[in-house]
Length: 254
Image 1: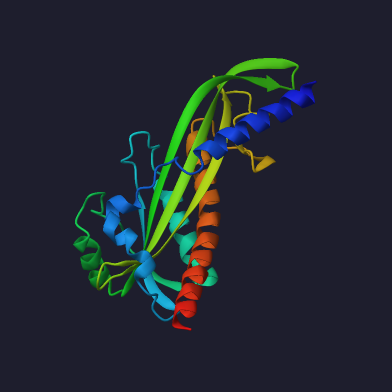
Image 2: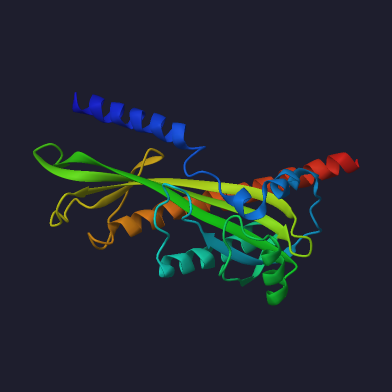
């Protein structure tokens, strides 16, 4: 019977995740580049590859239910990771990392061209990093079901949106996104470190667990784990978007 309820719980969670997958967090990149720029991507040809570009990651917390941004150290690790993986796995070589100082939604798109010129890059890979969280009370079981403890579950949905931008014109040439999801279970009070706090990659990898190094820092660890899952998908989806658009161009030319 216990197995039945565990399976049922995962099915319910899977339905909830699927329902939120395309809407949580809300897409933000059009607020930075303008909806017209995003709409013109399909008709704007890709330049010859490989492309050399600068990387800018913008932590976005402007949405109504936005979670706090990653700590600076974690954000730096994310920049370095994406610089390496984008350079090795796509046709875009990241030569430099550019700070996102002063970049905000509903700002002046000309600011991106000014920054790119300042750093001497012809193309800019702009990534908007956002996440949404919700926390609710739940009962945590110790030793499977022998003991119960009041606690909390926190769900984190993370989103990385990327646009390849021609720095001379400010036009977006390519767009992709990657989403991640993770949950944190923690008791209402610290001290049960044999089992909790624990982070799960539900429902994709229900057996994979991460134990945060501290109770107080567990929410930040949750955000890092979820954002790393989004980063995995972002790189693969940008690969696919490049191949798909290049194939459409070849078909049109033929």
